[in-house]
Image (cartoon, rainbow, N blue to C red; front, side):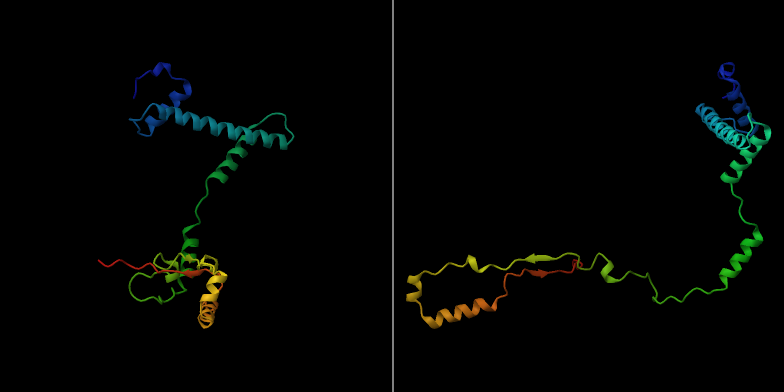
Length: 179
């Protein structure tokens, strides 16, 4: 990468290039320099904006070195957090490990969810409407004279035994297909 348009680069790009070289990075794409510059500019703008806010809060007309240091320190404290010391972690682990794990109530194998939560349980219902009495052929007066009265009372009893217009719900469990 060295030597390609070295004189055409702005001063900041040359600085980024020298930083990459000092860290041992020799092979990179040209857009890496632009990405670092964008990150660098964004960081500087955020720090200077924070420094300006601190300066205005202190009723100063200009930003001074202390405002910039405070802005950088607040950005470091906000962006990067240090892990707790090793002793604290060991103490926390020891207190947590004093409590034994609960015994497994499931036997050997993979514990499965309850059957109602699996895809193998019935998960749909069919509504089968009853045939209504209005679909039966109507009798006329001539038919009534010809039929036996005992026979017509039997027909009335059969139709009264049927439930009145309530659909029947049926659910089917999904079962495995035989192989």
